[in-house]
Image (tube, rainbow, N blue to C red):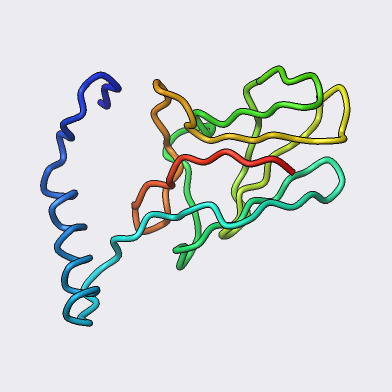
Length: 134
């Protein structure tokens, strides 16, 4: 189980493997496994949904659990609420239902000090925290 007050990962082997994969790929040009976390690329709206795309996603995204933890949304009123999101291939789709206005939308994922994310690439690499406004 993760603990936000403990900066030392329990899975040191996994972190070490990712760093060694980075060194082998970046320094020696020898790709031996996935090491790059999916990073926010862009967000766009279609109706009452926001589609979020990521760099470094090869096959898709997965949720480890029943819902995405740490996903929040805010409308014109500036009040942050828990957001509902789902995965469609390599995109995160966030519903804007329930917002007072649709002029602007802010979305964040684990962009605070105490969220423990559960959104990963299908290769098991965690998605990097982000915040965006559209």
